[in-house]
Image (cartoon, rainbow, N blue to C red):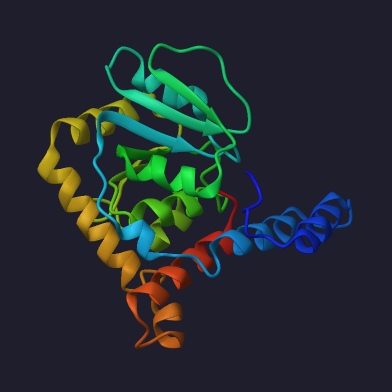
Length: 231
């Protein structure tokens, strides 16, 4: 992911040096980089109405992702996956690869998708939460691998559709069901956005951030998700 153009030169230089240090943990390297892009962030930008692309499925991130499962699930469906990752993958008739989008481009790609999918290869890890947070704030319906950390932020059947880990058939069925059911997509998207904007990180955020505007709710939600896991 690219450094934002607004980042001071001294900040970028110091962060690159610090991130290259072997003594720095992955979370310590990741979190300040995400924070500099998100905080303060024009969260209202995420709330703008966008036209979605019919049949477009967004998938983003590398850490703990089961891209092979996703490719098997969409094979022959007619769905078009925009897969954002650190490097291109093998050619696939249903997949377009995008490499290392800047943050705003990443957000725009989520906003234009009919469905956001988060296929995880290790459901016990705190992964996929940044994509989940962005998708919820933008009111996009999400299909994700069942994960206790994702369930902390979204309820199955209400703000997200969860499928078992490693089950390509279940993932395929969930994607096709949402693709064919616009009212369901809209209902999930509205509920997800409402929960995110109103402090869906739960009572811990609710107790410490009571009375904040929706802008600050969004920042709290994104901050907690981003500091919990990589994208």
